[in-house]
Image (cartoon, rainbow, N blue to C red; front, side):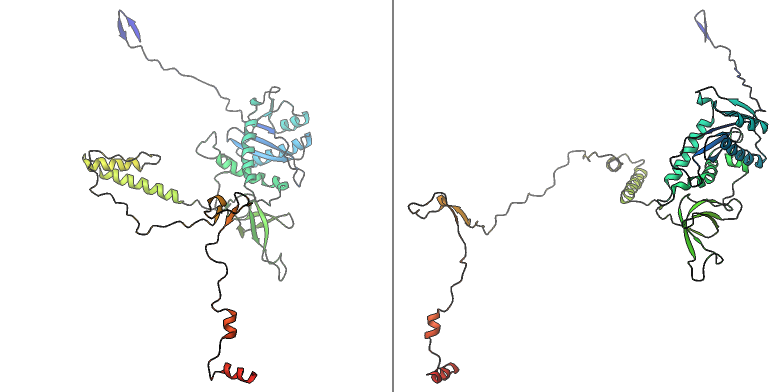
Length: 396
C-alpha cells in the first residue's frame, strides 16, 4: 500500500515467475552399500548393495559376500541387467561414494554411464543413503514378522520379495499416479502373483512323484516369495532339506494374525455414542424442562465426562418417613471368657499361691457321668422267669 497526501492507494499487483532448469537428458542412478548384516547367510552373503533410480523412484537391492571390487562389480551388473531387461530405464549418470575402486568405475563406464563421486565425508549428497534407510526399515519390519523357527541365516532369500513389496508402496516421480514397480514393470497382477507374509510357516503339497508309497502328502517349510514365472505358485524353503521348492498348493500357518474383535468396552462406548446421538436428534426445537434434562443426560454420557447430574429448581424432598430402627426382641448375652487371670476370679486365693495365674475354665464338663453305676448293675436282681434269672439259677 502507498500513502500520498494521507491517502491510501492500492499498489499494482505483480506476478513473479521463478524458473529452474532441469537436465532432461540426465537419468541418474545412485548406489551405495549397507553395513554388515549381523548373521552371515548360508550362501556367504554379508552386505547388500542398494541402488535407486530417480525417474521411477525405484529401489533395487542385491546381496554381496564382501565389499571388494569383484563383488561390487558382480552385484552392480546384476542390478543393471534387471533394469535393462525392462526396456524402460537406461541410466546414463551414476553417482557413487568417494571410496569407489577404479576397476568398479571402469565397469560402470563400459555401460555408457558417467561416473560422479560425492565429496569426502558428505554422505547427504548421495541419495542412495536415504534409500538405504528406507530399504533397511522395510527389511527389518519383515524380519520381525517371520516365524520363530525361521532360520535367520536364510535372510538373503527374502531380498527379492522385500524389494517387490517396497516398490509397490512407493510412488513414481514421473507419474505419481502409479507405483514405482508399475513404472518399471507395469501393473502388478495380484491374481497371477498372490503375496503372502514372508517367513511364514507353511505346509505344501507333496507331488506323488516326490513322495513314497505310504509317505506323507505334505511337508513343512517357510514361505519365501511368489514365483514370477509361474501362475499362482509359491517358492517354499523346505524345512528338512533347506532347499527351495515351487508349489501351487500351500497352507499358511498364520492363525496368530487374527481379525480385531470388539471388546465389552468398545460395545459400551458405541452404545453411549448412539444414545447421545438419538437424544440430541430428538431435543431439537424443544426449549423446555425436558429439553434441559435431555441435554444434561447427553453431556453425562459423553466419553470422559464425569460431571454429576445436578437437578435444577427447588424440588421438595420425597414424602417418605424415615425408617425407625427396630429394637431386637432378644438380647444376646456374651458368654464368660474361658481364659481369665486369677485376679479376675472371685474365689478366694490360697496362701503361698503364685499371683496372676492363668486359669482356663470349660463351659461344659469334658466327661459325662454314666447313667448307672457299676454297683447298681451288679446288685440289680433280674426279673423272674427271665433268661437272666434262669442262667443265675443254673450257676447257683
